[in-house]
Image (cartoon, rainbow, N blue to C red):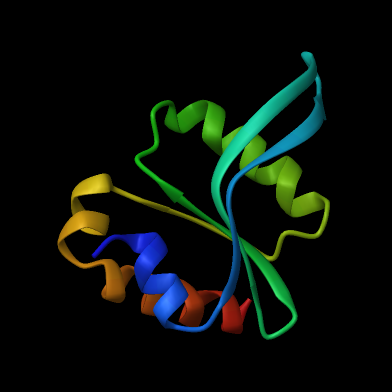
Length: 97
């Protein structure tokens, strides 16, 4: 089972592979997010396997300034080994955001 299947079995509305169009200090950029999740009226992004942590931190701030309540990054190994745990942790953090 993978993270998408775990989210589906949790009955949570999510959008896989969402692309956001951002205006940054360097100009307009696309940001591909792994999963946009709507839970208890809050929007959050669950990101799997961060490639460039510095770039991700900058874009996370921009997304949060636009109303995304919570952004959480998970290593692909963790997502593969414990998809239900990852989803449950993310939903708990999002509900507290």
